[in-house]
Image (tube, rainbow, N blue to C red; front, side):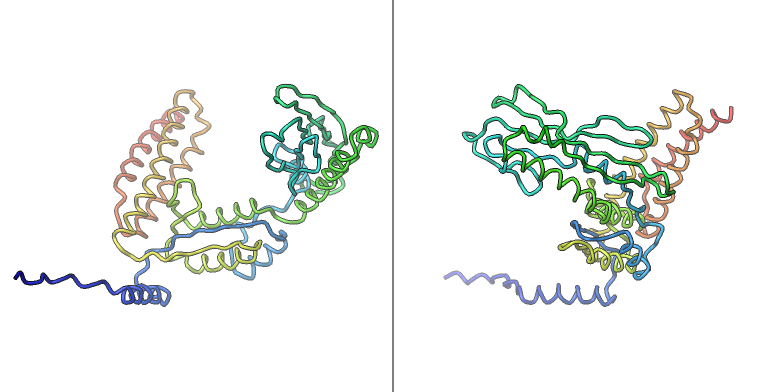
Length: 357
């Protein structure tokens, strides 16, 4: 009879969880080595004014130099009347079948027929006014023919020259009641709905920062902390532990934005695997930046644009400074990046010599 073979011990899941919990608690308490933080954030539209931001920056001791510029009425006008601005799309047999933002509701293929789009198109601009028209575009079933009503209303931005405020002015929307009255009753209501949407969207953009502007603010602030993009497309960053107070303040700031907005700091243990991930992310990004810089230097040499030398040198100096800082903070040698920097430095030196000549 064969003796029973000893079985490996069954993993104690409860013990494993306890170890993870203990390590997390140690990280939070500063009793375990932390390399830095992975930073992720999601930001949604909310009722955040420029004055709110200025007050919160002061309260949280954030750098006021990174505040976004004041909102400009002319930018609000350009946005709501631009290609990505207010537009309504709907089937002609049911003009009310639009989404809350004017987008067309999904319909079955058998239900599709002629459709119309209400949009805003440029007419003219000068030092006093920007003029655009509300246009109705009708498409046939095959979407091969278009027909236009070129002026259902006028959307004008009147520049204000009585103030020194940049981009100041007012919006004036004037419906063409005669042209609108020629449309079916249901379409008239949709046109009037779009006109009201233009007014409310403009007023909101003049008052509150959009989610896009708030995301740009957070991205700029995180990158100003000498962050490393862990994901090439952005959205996930590594920030060194020395910036922990700033990240805590930024997290509180984001929590005051629109509902659901949040910033998460994931502590990274100071381990070889984590360090390797961050170093790889940095060297990949640095190589791309250096490749672009080398191409721009070569282009300046070919064309003799010596006026670009200072701008190119500033880009090189910034890359060199960032490399030195991360090498010191990560306690590692970034040999590949340093070698690439040396090659670009020689290339830049040749351009400098040409400029001196």
